[in-house]
Every structure is written in structure tokens, then in C-alpha cells.
Length: 348
Image (cartoon, rainbow, N blue to C red):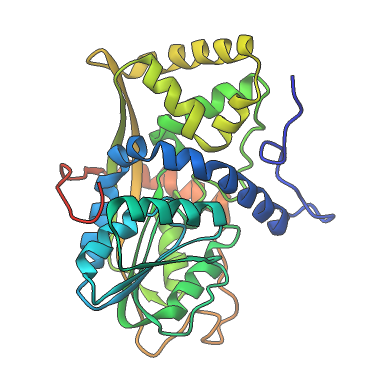
């Protein structure tokens, strides 16, 4: 069996035992550089499930012709391209990602879709290279949770948004409600191909607690107004399409599978299909997920982030405390499904 690459190694720590954020950034950069071409090839599969989330975000962003909007962690860019269709030729979308290969993929997708009012930049959301108050709003779908310092990224986002603008973003809810990811990750960890997730490391579920999100948004200098749960479902017609998704598009899981020999790949597939049998539906599979959408965070007038206001750096609540709050809140939180997908200009 091949040794783990940097992508599958346990989280790096400093001499004092704390997580090393720079090491995490390097791992994340390598991951998304390698995943860019895969996501471009498989974007229609991903878009089928995630488009309702993007449409919800763009509706709340409410872009108008002539405005300028920034998309952070854009990936293949389709969420921002929905907004670009509303900005018309007078407006401008800045589509950005910190992985250059993702930016190049977004350029090719924009050409395919006929998007002409977008510019493309390599931007680290924790260090946004734009002037203060230079955009009318920002959108980030499934990005902040993967950043080494989401508090800093949110403060940077607040800095570049003009007064009266808004931020919309989405993250995934608690792991128990997202078996589309946790089942495959569990199988790979059990078979020794991935390390177990570090609860203190940034990752797909690191912002799954609503109270943590509200604290981060407020500390960054935004007025929080709306956080909504939404159920999604990844649908696959058969075992072949399910396997194609897991082995091609599921981030570090897919890259780890690519390094297995044929015998072990077959064993992993069999284990996955056995675990996913509970989600069989109409001859295929439906893998549920839960998303948390922030739909209308506006910069507080005349106020910067908590740190800017002299209150000291914004402190993220401990994940142990967040998990306790999440468990207490579970009984009272009921998700709402997103509306059926609507036709929109600018993206497929």
C-alpha cells in the first residue's frame, strides 16, 4: 500500500501542539490544484445537486445591472456566473480562487457558457488584494469552512464590501446529516487510506454550528439577519454513477482512491455500496445532505470588525463548546428543503 501523501497525513502541529495553519494552507492548496481538472470535467454532476443552493444565494444577493460582485473560493465558477447574468454588460463579476488551476478552469467554463462580464483572479480570501469598499457584495459557496482562518477571511470580506452591500455564503451542517461525505470518508479511514478527521482542523464540517457562524459574522463587522437550513440530495442512477462520483470528485477521497491497486479499489467500492445500501431509492441512490445558508449579512454602518473596533481579535468559540451547543439545538431545528430548481440565465 502506498504511503499517504501530504493530503492524507494527519494535521501538522507546531512544537507546542497547536495546529500549524501554514501547513494546512499548503495541504489545501495542493488538494484544490489537483482537483481542478476533475471538478471541471464533473461539474454537471456537482451542479445538479448544488445549483439550488447557488440560486438561493444569488437571490439573496440580489445583484443589479452595473454592480460589481466578488466570488470567493469560486471553484469552477458557476455560482458567480448566475450573478453575472443579472449584472448584465454594465456590471462586473470578480471570480476568484486561491488555486490557480481552479481559476483557469473557471475561465474555460465561462467561455463555454458565454460569460463576458467576468474577470478572473487568484485571490486568497484571508488576504484579499482589493481596495477597501470596492465591491457591492460577495458570495462564497462552501468556502469559508475550508479556510485556515475563516475569521480573518470574513474580516477581509467585510473590508472590501461597500456600505449597503451584502455577503451571502453557505457551509455544510453537522456530519450526522451529511452521509454523502461521511460514509465514504469512514470507509477510507477504516481501510487505512485516509487519516481520521482532526476535529480541531478546518474542514468541511468545521462551521457546522449556527452559533459559531453567527459569532464569526458579528465579530467580522456584519449585521447578521438570516441563517437557514436547507436539505440537499445527491442522486445517482446506479452503482456505476455513484462510484464515478466518489472516485473522481470527492476531494481527498478521490485522490486516495486513484493511488490504490485494482484489487483494493474493488474492495473499497464493494464496501461503499454496502454502506450506501440504506440510501437506495427508485433503483438508484439518494445521499442526503444539510446546508447552512447565510442569506443577508450586511456591513454595520461605520463599524469595522471586532478587532478594528479595538475589542481585540475576534475569537472563534472552541469546537468543543460549539459541539455542545449544536447538540442542545438539534431538537428545535427543522430543515427546509430548497425550492425546485429554476431556469436561470448565465449557467447551466
